[in-house]
Image: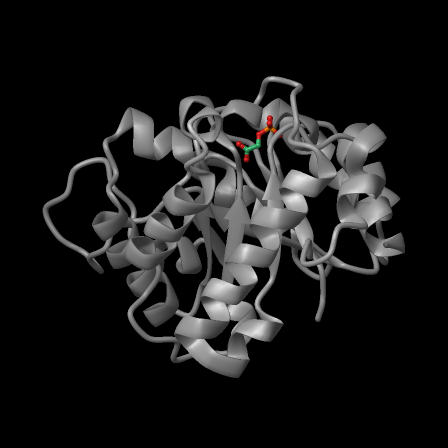
Length: 249
Ligand code: PGA
């Protein structure tokens, strides 16, 4: 299975930051794993132009469930693809919190993304209160049950799950390696029960305060097949070493 280092720029970046993309490509000409950046929609097409012919892929941060229509401010999976995207992040906890996205909405988006030929990166993760209450696996199980497409039609690598504990995002705090291992093993088992053999080849990413200094340890955890990186994906000098750590794992 090819591992995936994915960067999520969130609502960060204007034209000036595109220089980071060239720097990343120069530093990681042959990364040894898949390398993806998901910029804000305003930069997507330009980033895709810069990345053309390189090992870097680009993706969106959300899409609408419909192909086109009267949905002011929204972007469809087909539009992302047309702009050069190969992937889309869906159901990120910030979208679930800021925009009230439910598991059902995320499932509809993931189904649309797969139909458009994009790889869907579906995010799940517990809040701190849920972890403290011992409900982590219940919460993840419910999110997986509700957010994933009903059927897996495409290749195994077109559906990626990102486990991102909400309390670890942007905080500098991470779960213990045992906690990461427990959740990733649970996700693998849940996917295999649901989709069968194909699930063994699906990539499971860890996300939440991944940085160069903790990346190698996290990547050594069983069933961690890559990372979804926020803050540390904004600069080539931060993201490059994470990509290198993944390639070496
Ligand atoms: P972080 O964000 O790496 O800044 O914690 C991760 C994410 O939200 O995908």
